[in-house]
Image (cartoon, rainbow, N blue to C red; front, side):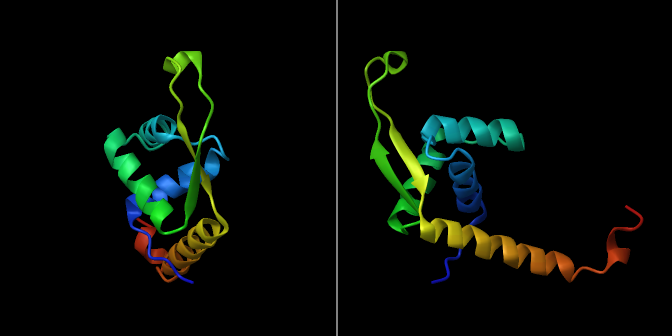
Amino acid sequence: MRFNLGEFEEIVLLVVAAQNEEAYGLSVTTSIEEELKRPVTMSSVHTALYRLEEKGLVKSEIGGTTKSRGGRRKRIFMITSAGKEALLDAKNARNHLWSMIPKVVFENR
């Protein structure tokens, strides 16, 4: 099955995969801001996470309580097999398009 990921969904899914079963709303938001130097809101990240979950590309579970969160629990997101497949499809599509660009295009930048 092929999934068409929007650019922001792809970024969120990449971060979830990179955080390897330790991803939650704030950690994903912080990672995008720090790694990509791109301001994002936590609500946009949550929206993307829930959309990815509806598509079956991530799954979530409620983690344990922590003192640092005042006893509140956080929802942990993990990439699914379908999510991994979607990322590989996106990577292959991008690599194919990049390979079509003649080298001369970037010679005198």
